[in-house]
Image 1 (tube, rainbow, N blue to C red):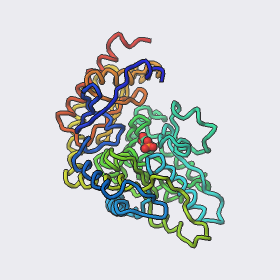
Image 2: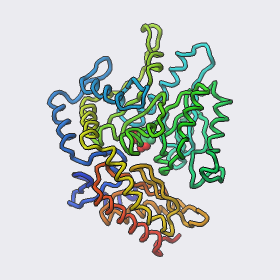
Image 3: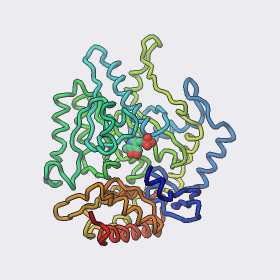
Image 4: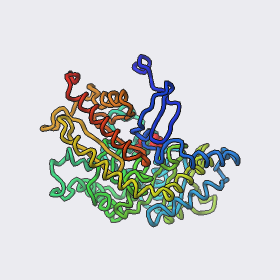
Length: 436
Ligand SMILES: Cc1ncc(COP(=O)(O)O)c(C=O)c1O
């Protein structure tokens, strides 16, 4: 806040397509998709229209004990698109709440499914995970910088190292490692399955952890182990969902069906806050009973199932079909990979990780030893500042530059984005400016 008070903060007034426009009329490429939410560009006529049309009906009525047409239609559409076996939708209002719902549902499911067995109420998650900023989501997260202060508030969990191939915790290399990083997860499932309600992870890409891309087959193996040890699998598709990785949902790359799935961000194409937790018929049925059986899932937010959000989400999904968004993303992802290739040769680029339109460029002080830049050098922030003066807005993840373009970006805009980033990385890391 001290810096914010001294700086001149950017005030974004308008947007169009891949661009954000500030109060001074300056245009910036939206390199974060407004923090990973925007898919089809700003001011998409169909999304604007869907909101206006819904406004003529009603902006909001509670979802507690009632329903509304856009929420019903959206649930049907989500089920159609979700991994096979996902049949039910529970709405909330953002990514963190969608995760909270999944955690609470998992615990209550086991209470109702096996009332006589010992409690299955703890969670297994990855170190460096990020699942949101509410206390439950922080409990299953582990980003030291964000979370350390709140430790006294958090519930205990089990953690294992993430599949971070560039800095493999076991010092092995893929594929010769045969994914040995999964062994500790298996060992914990084996010894602790009686107390574990669920494993939670982001499928394929641990996004806020630094866009760490898991090796192929990692998610499949986690699914197999969860099934074997009767522990639920929660996938957090808040960042990876809605085409970001080239499929509608990341777990569809490996044909994996989770037991619970948290979605938000791209759900409304970046227009409105909305979240949902999707689940299977089996889990849903464990919550059915007479009132006095006390199986009700008591979790409701004021804006749960907001009609404006659901209406714009429906239009958002419709655009996927009309504009053939997924095949386009896959094609443009290949272009993006080609554009990024020369950056891998820069002196301070340690690793470039990409999965579809999710890119992490890890900057290192020493490429040979992979020595990281000290955080206080704020190298990622400085690269982002250098991008900003050139007309590209980014938000780094520590020393990792995250590039998450809108799915609708044109090849020309994508080329410009990477060119700006290339210049900014060179200027920031290769000039004498990088001094301690
Ligand atoms: C994987 C993941 N889960 C959950 C969240 C939390 O979502 P929200 O910011 O909408 O609460 C985020 C946000 O960045 C996320 O990346």
